[in-house]
Length: 132
Image 1 (cartoon, helix red, strand yellow):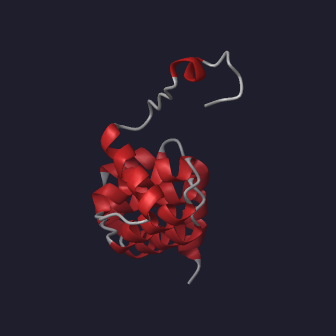
Image 2 (image 1 turned 30 degrees about the vertical axis):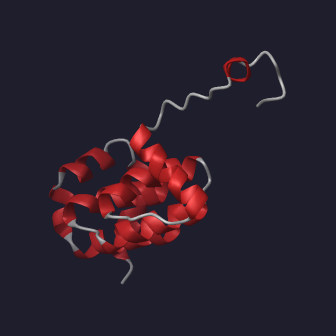
Image 3 (image 1 turned 90 degrees about the vertical axis):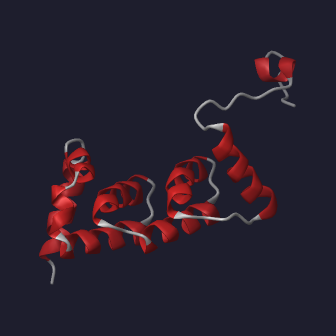
């Protein structure tokens, strides 16, 4: 399986991936092998990070588009954070536009969680919001 015999994975012929649950891995593998999957916004929000981690760009784009299409007050801060951290420009821009025109986002728990560790992102959003 691997070139180096000293790897535990090579000796056991098993690779452990501990940062994704089996259900998500199943959906990820179905997409990898079949390029099809039944999406909803909940699944998209769970799959986008593993898709980004494993560089499955088409899946990242599909998940991002589904999430943008279903943006709400409660999810806007999460979309902004994901768009920023995973470098998905259209997702980040759509979230910023939504936040700019929906001030209620700033009252949500998601917003409060986003702002504490992301002062640079807040500054960028303030600048973006000042542009007509």
